Image (cartoon, rainbow, N blue to C red; front, side):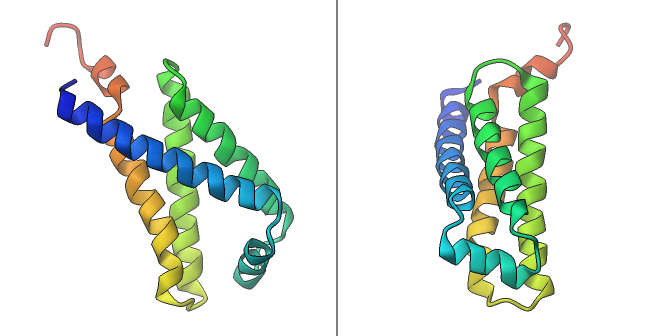
Length: 127
């Protein structure tokens, strides 16, 4: 892995971890604004707890060394959660500004996943 790719990976991953951790905590403590947001989307409030826990666990998984298969699941979870948030906001005709947070986290998820060090482990040995 080149130095440039390592820097891109860590910048994206740290920002992704901060974003997912902060939104996960906001969902776990059921902050008033987030409760309002979830309610306006038509989702049950218990889903906030489930998503909040999974976000925190996903961050831990992405940051710990090794376990490439588990990391793939964490990245997939982040991807599905953020695309689901974007589609949900679009479906109810929300203000376009509500798309910024999930879109940013989606881009960070993709960049972190693409530049992850484990990517090199999937190449055949004879290359």
